[in-house]
Length: 440
Image (cartoon, rainbow, N blue to C red):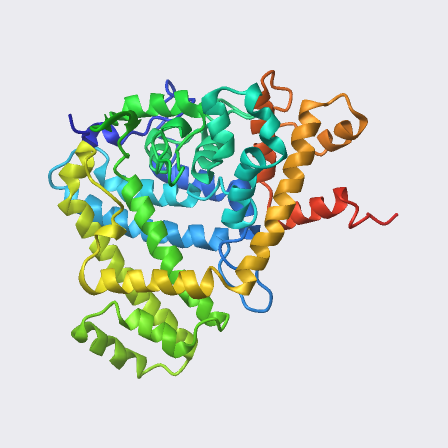
């Protein structure tokens, strides 16, 4: 049984399933999702979260906020390409796919903790290798798996869907379609791949995802009924992210002089055949500013990748709707684009992700997160202690630290710490470890 677009694209909102008011203004429901996200506090906090490089000094490079905005722009283009192709044969909301994808792109990184992927790893290893190991016997198997494999993707879904204290049901009250579009790994932690250990939702939000999946008609994976197939628009959100982080990291590396101008131009030119390369060389001859030249080549590469990923989606629509499509859209690139993209990945791994600047922020962030996790987890589990009460006073009331279960208390701490910005986490670490004392 295959999924169908008429059911997949739904304006129903989580937490407001029985409320319908489509006449408030000229925006459609998915544009409202976009606006709700872009004006939210968690989205604003992305401006102070590391993307790859440390937060900027004299040279401005990407943070999570600028990255998410660029991903939303690319996602909108991918969605519009697909909707135009489907519009002639599919009824309903297919003309609004671009709005759904761009909204989901804004939200895709909201669950990432401070300090990038090292923050994720620090949280997971606190439980699997660190001082949090004693909690294993206090949780069920799936709850413990959620902790030892803490996942920013699952945390994003929780942030958007969970009813925090004092908030309305449904969290952000987004449409089912937008929420489904951010779940790259539509299964719980106990059914995650043993190598990647990626999963899409915590046990606490499993019922919410299953309700959304049933409403939208998302099928189970043909070869594994414990997993759902991906919601089709996830492929477009993922492609937008893949395109942006890979290509923009190369441009950032050039600005930081990790890559020379010649190296960067060579990487970008390798995406084009001879005719396209000649056209771009002619354009570069009209521009003397080096940064502008790199920006032009970068935009040309992104445009080509958008076209190729859109075409791959359309060509594989039946497999995507049946849940049998394998891999990401970017993995199905061919020719110059495939070779060049893989080359960019290799260069990024060797020269960017292992650079001194990146390693330093990862090491420092790791220590900060482990320390905060240790202090606050023990505080919520032993609230009767004097120092615990002082720490608990730092936790905003929206986080349910009084949850009766150990798992619930730990999730409240994860909500608090993962929502911090890099600067806030560093400042709090310095204060509670006595490195910085507030002057009287």
